Length: 237
Image 1 (cartoon, one colour):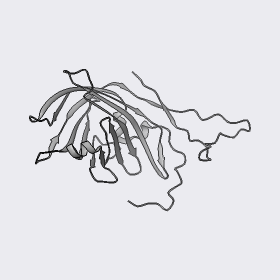
Image 2 (tube, helix red, strand yellow; image 1 turned 90 degrees about the horizontal axis):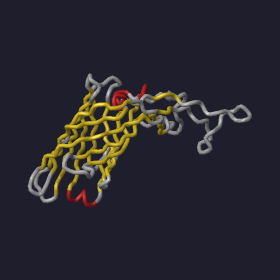
Image 3 (cartoon, helix red, strand yellow; image 1 turned 180 degrees about the vertical axis):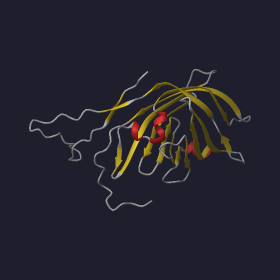
């Protein structure tokens, strides 16, 4: 990528309205449930098919800057169970991020079995479909696992394809390629489902910080600058 000469200066007059700048990710904002997910995973005796139900919460965050690079995003928590068990089948946290200047979309994910990833793609602001991908060994958009997972259930690639529907729901296909220890061929794990909204998340501008005794705005002590006016978000039902 082209690196600008000035990598330190952050954008001025940042729009605090997160939802207005999320591009296609604005369709994610809210709380969602799915009841007909299907997953096929590798077992010692052969592939096992599991039906599952899921809940995911996605809430807007304040704009985030890497010097001149500006992201708008959502913080999410995905929780999945199966009808047969009370314990968690899958749990995942992370962020969805959108860079309006380039159309870059990022999904960060972490699961409590010792695995993290950053998947990337691009989409237009009005896109009804999007796709992100991560590959093992990549230093930009890659996958990192514990030593055991790397040896026993190595994840070589991950891709998530999403489609937003006219009724407000959205569907997904998650394509993960696993190399299982002792097997000759990679195993494609392809869970899929559709999520319907149970709450949406509007976002309103935050109030400007109060002025000091001399009429000046307070400054950010860490960076020596006036704090930007960011967004605060509330949940609506």
